[in-house]
Image 1 (cartoon, rainbow, N blue to C red):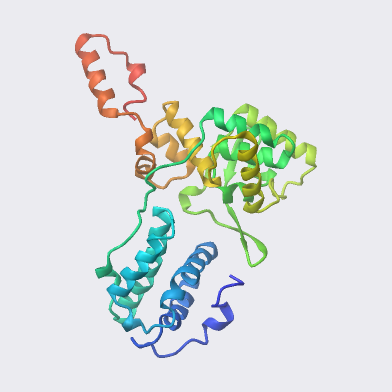
Image 2 (cartoon, helix red, strand yellow):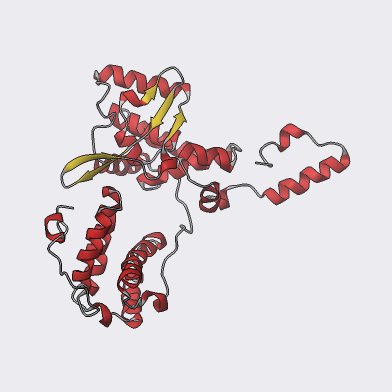
Length: 328
């Protein structure tokens, strides 16, 4: 937020009168000030970064009533040539739309986004993830760094988000049940560490650790002499990105993003036959439909499984235990 052109101290000094011919930048001051009291700081920081970096350069100096569907489509065309992912294109596009929806709802201004249509997609067309063999090749490169090794082990075997990982402390581990207590997330804002509530209420959850992982994490805490309230991984995401890049190069496995390690975990669970409901609870999806929609192409063809089960029932060869995963 420190680098944003709209600092908190400037927000209350915005124009008192809102008119359709005020510039987009002036109106954004009003929008931002209102959102400050309604959005989590991390969410607002992300929104401000996108609008400041991708939207204000194109529309900031223009009057609100001079921004037409044609101008928006021209701007969208420019974005489409930048090589951004479909999900990022949709994110940028929806942030512009959110400002105009706000202007329409509270100040009766025209919303040109309704005629311009949208670009991008809310769901990625393809998912990048590692197989178990690829992960094993990668993690072998982290043996020289206990903190990197522990971080990637937790990401891969628990499927937690990177912000959730970076917020973890030893007191978030239940030693009796071998659970991670996910109750917060970490971000870096304005040069300082910020710990806040997780992405959604459903992100607050317990995540079971396999015995080997619990032993690794416990040994790591003991070896470092870490206090109960200290962060398990006392770094930012930049450290993990650097280690990921080096590990991919050294091991020869394909390059993926930090978040794709979470996809790798889900892929592993699907491959082992776990249901969408079980996976959604583990990774903190609010709705099972989110899990199904994002990972639909990884789930087995249930219609074929159902048809085969019905055939076996007809033939008298059906075994209920074999059908357990298919019905979930």
